[in-house]
Image 1 (cartoon, helix red, strand yellow):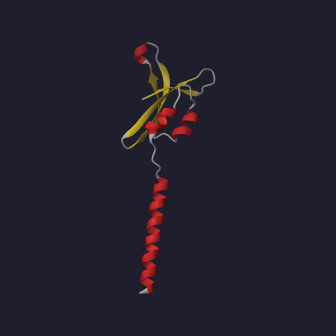
Image 2: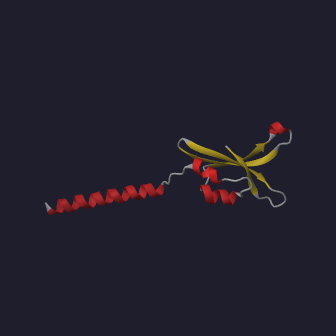
Image 3: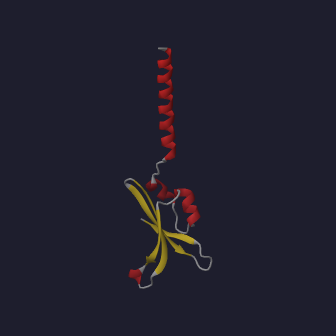
Length: 103
């Protein structure tokens, strides 16, 4: 009986520890709240510090409707129903990617 009690207690401890580890492994990001801290001109490194690693990134052409298209980088941050796309333009002559907008 005493062994069964210890076994039950041990299993409960493992269950609690496993639940806590799972919560730490998958942090929840409130990207909408974090966008309040975004500013035009922020570097890609600053955005990564604020938002974490992006789920997706792509180089593409922006501004086609303006008649003066330019190469841009888009980082996508998504978590379930909330998500954000951050658009960067490359600064001349340094080549740094800087925020020009988000949606």
